[in-house]
Amino acid sequence: MHFGPLIAMLVAGIGLAFVFGALAHRLRVSPLVGYLLAGVVVGPFTPGFVADQQLANELAEIGVILLMFGVGLHFSLKDLLSVKAIAVPGAVVQITVATLMGMGLGWVLGWTPMAGLVFGLALSVASTVVLLRALHERRLMETERGRIAVGWLIVEDLAMVLALVVIPAVAGALKGGDGAAGPFGLGLAWVLLVTLGKVAAFVAVMLIAGRRVIPWLLHWVAHTGSRELFRLAVLAIALGVAFGAAALFGVSFALGAFFAGMILNESPLSQRAAEETLPLRDAFAVLFFVSVGMLFDPSILVRAPLALAATLAIILAGKSLAAWLIVRAFGRSSGTALTIAASLAQIGEFSFILAGLGVGMGILPTIGQDLILAGAILSILVNPLLFTLLFRIVPVEEVVATPNAAPETEAPALEPTTLTNHTVLVGYGRVGSVIGAGLKESGAPFLVIEDRAAPLQAARTDGAEVLFGNAADPQVLEAANLAAAQRLIVVIPDAFEAGQVVEQARAANPALEILARAHSDAGAEHLHDCGATGTVMSEQVIAHALLRLVRGEAAAVRN
Image 1 (cartoon, rainbow, N blue to C red):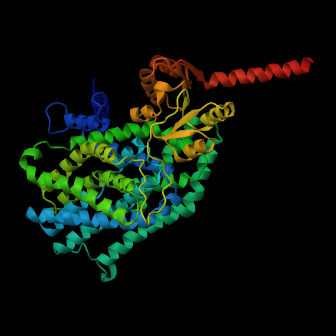
Image 2: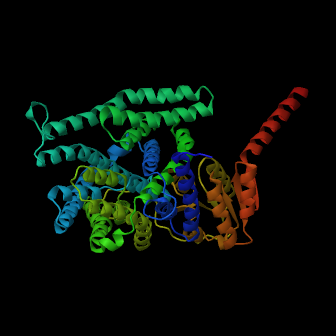
Image 3: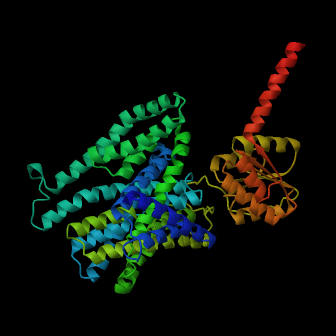
């Protein structure tokens, strides 16, 4: 039976990503490592099946579009402007420092200044997917340090969009061609003016027209009552705006999708839109990492070990140190500086594009592309370990006071509770806050575990002792003193994460009463298997409450 390269790519990529990702998880390593290894296995540099690289790149591009759209849904224009004072100058200085270091390495290797410039720029820009995944895993997206990191990344992306336009013109001028000559003899100034004009035009269209059309369209589709149409509308907006931005304005797909999500963030339906696109975003993000793994040629480890070591030093140490110094110079805490430094200690999507452009135009030698790809793979592998190492030295929750520091509205350091015979409540949203109010009224001591700033502050206001962090983190559960607790109540909606919490809690205290929230029979069964004493399914509670109202009304009529 005949099957095309697309099916083979999807089956091999997703199947092997699952196998290696599960193995990585079993070994307590980031699943990203498994996804990259899956790419190496199906790549052209290892024996056996070789997937279609072109298809892999295109599928990965869709993943970046959907991921950036999701970021925009949680990152408003107000948030972006709130960090512009540090993100804009910080990103510009960091790009300059990293580019100069890359040019220095290129000079040592005997390359031309233009080759060094392309090489340095490729090393200066971080991977969107890796950075966002790292922030999401550590629940930092809604913190000030998370907003600074994402704002910093957006400035980097804008700079790379400009670089992709300017580099061909400069290269043409250096070769004696007319690539730098524009209308009216303005040369590179004209190229820069046109590029900035296109970006400004796109932003203006999104802020003026898109701000009205996109929320209105989604609102209209929601009123049709069709979940399928709503999901299609969200995907059509994300992909359509990204493609239109690239085709009409010369802006990158990722930047176009980000602005689409940012505009849609103003709609009350933004949360639902994020939920509808999450499964597809995750699937295509995995394919992105598989495509990166396919580019890795392991022979570079033997062919140029010293050059590769120097490349990694620039990515992991040079960029991180520059970012740390810049953030500290702006008066931010050491925890914030370490977050930005660790977030930027890797390279990714734009690096691959710049490397391909440089080799295609004859500017960058092939070994330069190999070093960039190897540096990307290895830095992505090392980045989670770097995060772990840095925040073992200085915890992510740490807020270090400095004389001129701007106040940070983030959670306090993780300190073990001294409560005993208490109730531990995981989650303080709409359900958790009602339970918390009841516990407060009864006078029972209780502790709330939350990873969001606003609910955390609400729990503290309601008189609860609080712990900031992900309840599935063993260190957070240990700080909650489950061994001496009376009961644990888990009301977070994610069944998989709730199951991890329940399982660890049962191991910590076999006699603990554990009550959990479920959304389905399968979810309730999963929580019971993990060790829950009892579960409550929201649909059943609603049904019984409605029946009580019906019976009450019927009794009133009879009386």
